[in-house]
Amino acid sequence: MVKTVNSVTAGQDGTRKDFDAIAMEVFSNRLLAITEDMAINMMRSSFSSQIKERHDFSVGLFDAKGRLVAQGTHIPIHLGSLMGATQALLSAFPRENIQEGDAFICNDPYLAGGTHLPDISIVSPVFVDGQLAMFTACIGHHADIGGPTPGSTSANAKNIYEEGLRIPIVRIASRGTADTHLLAMIAANSRLPEERTFDLQVQIATNERGASAIRMLASRMGLEPMRLATEALLQYTQSRLEQSLSKLTPGTYSFTSWLDDDGFGGDAVPIVANVTVSGQKLLVDMTGSGPQARGGLNVPASALNATVYYCVKALVDPELSVNSGLFEPVTITSPKGTITNPSSPAACSARSITCQKVAGAIFGAFREILKSDHVMASSNDVLPAIAFSGYRSDGSYFVFGESLGGGSGGRSGSDGIDGVHVHITNTLNMPTEALENEFPLFVDAYALVPDSGGEGLHRGGLGICRQIRALNSDTIFSGRSDSHKRGAAGVFGGRDGGRGRLIKNFDLDTSEILPSKVAKVTLAAGETIRIETPGGGGFGPTEERDPRLLAQDLRDGILSVERAREVYGSDLVASALTP
Image (tube, rainbow, N blue to C red; front, side, top):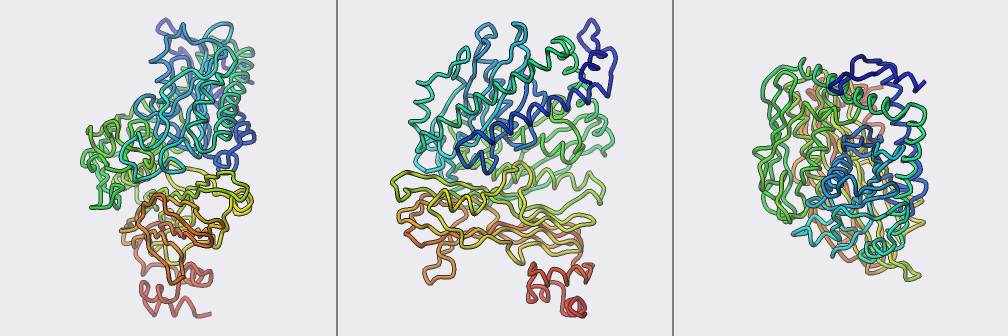
C-alpha cells in the first residue's frame, strides 16, 4: 500500500535516513499511473488527429522545485519542452504570484525552453493544504501555429519568425478560469482556430485531472511523506545510474553521423558526439558538429538535453526511471553558434531530424563502450514528416501532418525491426481509414520498401513507403526528410541501409524526384506524393547470413532475387532457394 512510504524519514540536512525499496517502487508506479491517466484523458478528449490518433503529446509531473518526478511513456523529445516550460515558469513568476487554479502556457525555444513552436506546453501548480506541492504539465503537437508554411514545420524557414506564433511563458488560466482573450489570440494565429481552442482547453483540463489525483495521493500519504518519497526516488535514480556508469570503461569515444544538408542544399553537415566516461560521470560534448543551419534543422538546448538523456537511459540502464535523478551525473556541452547550440533567432521547426542524428551519433560512440552483443547497427536515424493542406469541398480548411518510421539497425542475435519509429519519437501512424475519412486525400500505397534494409548476418529493418493522392486541386504539400544521400551505417561488416526518396507523381511520365526538404509544393487533383523512408544498417558479414533467413526474406518480398545475388552471391542464394 502507498502508506508504506512513511518509512522514509529525513535527517537534519533533508536527506533520507533510511530507505524502503518496496515503498519507493510503489510510490514511483503510483506517479506513473497518474501520468497515464492524464494521457488517456488528453488522447480521448482532444479534437485534433495529431493528438487523438497519432498520440503526439506527452505529460509529466514536477516537484515544487521544478524537478522532474515522472514522465508519461510517450515522446522522449517532449521531455525537453516539459522541463523547459517548468523552469521558465519558476524563473518568470515569483512563487507568491503562483496561485491555486492557475495554468501557464508557452512554446518558444529561446524564451521558454521549448523545442519548436508547434509543441505547446501547459504547466499548472498543484496546491495541497495551501502549500505548493507539485506541478502537472502536458505538451501537445498542434497541427498549425501560423507562419508561411501550413503545419508550421518547414525545414526551409530562415528564422524562427517564419515558423509561427511565439509564446513566452504567460498565464492562461487564473483561479480555475481560462483567459478566453488569450485563447482567442492564439487561435487567431492558426489556420485551424477551432482546433487550437479545443485542444488547449483539453490540455488545461488534463493538468487539473492530474492535480486532483496528486491531492488524493497526498491526502492518503501526507504532504511531508510524499516530499520525502520524492527525494528518495530522485536519489535512488541518481545512485543507480552512477553505479552503472562506474562499470563502463573510462575514456573518450567519438562518432559522426551526417545530415544531407542544412535545409537549403549544399554540403553534408557533420553531427559529432564525443562521449567521455569518467568514473560515475558522463560527458557528452558535441564539438565538431556543423555550424548553425540556415534552415530549420537547429537543435535548441532543451531538445539536445532530452536527446542525450534518452540515449543514456537506453544505452546504460533501460529500466531506469525518467526523473531528474537521471540528469545529475550527465554533463552536456556544445559550442555556441553550432547546429546543436544555435543562437536566436535561428529556425528550429525541423529540429527532430537533427536530434535523430545526435542520437545516432551517441549510439555510434557507445559501440566502443558496450560489449559487442549489446551493439547495434545504425537505425534510419531520421524523422521524415509530410504535410498536406488546402480546402475541403465544403470550403473548410484542413492541415494533415504525419511523421513516419523507418528501419532500425540489425543487432546481435536478431534482424532490425521494419517500419518503426526510433530514438526520440514514438508517435503512431495515421490510420488510412481515419486519414481518408477526415481529409480530401487518398492513400495509393502504404507498405514496406523492399531492399531497403542493410544486408548482413542480421539485416537492418525496412523503410516505409507512403503514397498519397490529392483529391482537390490547390492542395499544398511540404515535406522534410534526410538520408537521401547516404544510408544508415552498418557495423561489423554489415552493409549500409537504403536511402530515402521523395517523389511527385510516381510511375507517371511527369514523375519528379524532389529534394529531401521541400515547402509549399502545389498539387492538382489526382497528383501524388510518394515518400520512401530509409532502412536500418546491417550487422555482421553478409556471407554469414543463415540461408533459411535469406530464403524467408526472398519469399516475403523483403529482398529481391536480383539484390540478393548482388550482395550474397549466387551460391548462397541458390542454397537458400533450394527446397
